[in-house]
Length: 62
Image 1 (cartoon, rainbow, N blue to C red):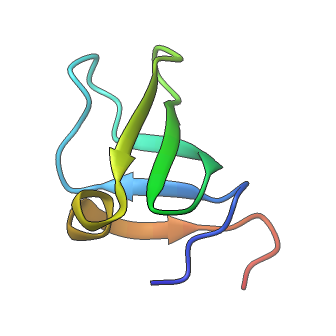
Image 2: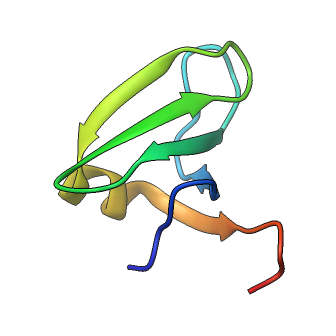
């Protein structure tokens, strides 16, 4: 899956605050993402993130 720093990902399950969109801050074996609802930053393994991504939203439309 082609996820880049700066992308916004929409997840299948929402964060406990109710938001389901996250900013991608770091990509590698682990992803660092920030909730757009409450600003909480989370680091998760790549395998877990890739299973839970519903859609990738990009600014430039690619």
